[in-house]
Amino acid sequence: MIAGAFFIVLQMRQNARLIAATLRENRTEVAFRILERLTEESFARRRKKMRDAVTQAQANGWVGFDDSIEDLEARNFGYFYELIAQFAQDGIIDLELLEKVLQYLVVVDWRTFRPLAEHVKSNYGVKMNPWGNFEWLADHTEKFLKAREQKGSLSDRTEFDGHDH
Image 1 (cartoon, helix red, strand yellow):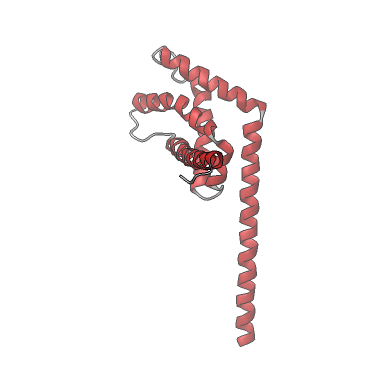
Image 2: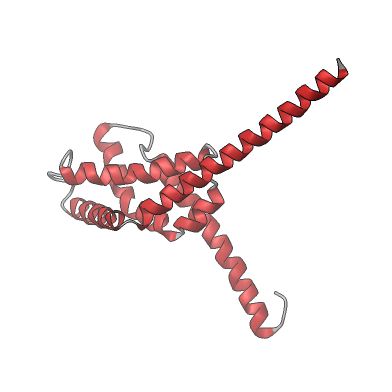
């Protein structure tokens, strides 16, 4: 009986290790796929199209923009970040890794995309930001980078003058 219980505990530990290894492998795969998407030439084109479309539509008071191909492509671009942020919130991808990989890319893209998010909320009478995760990721990443920059600037001063600050 005791040997049987010991075997069950041993098997449960082994299963837990296998599950943890599988989860790590899946997270790594997701991270690499995101990295592939970010470095594809098509991402740069989609990013440029979103930036141009939102900037032009805002300058034109959004006239003729709603439900146009430019509108739908820009929204789709935003959903890419929306899904990445959801993965981070759900622990599918490590948030700190994501912040290090995306850096100011997500921050700048959110600043460009924000007017479209606000327009969609206003236009459709939506109270919540449909791209709230995108906004969260940009805000969180910006705070992370500012903290890292502050730490870096403090250590840089220490190296140059030899004094602790």
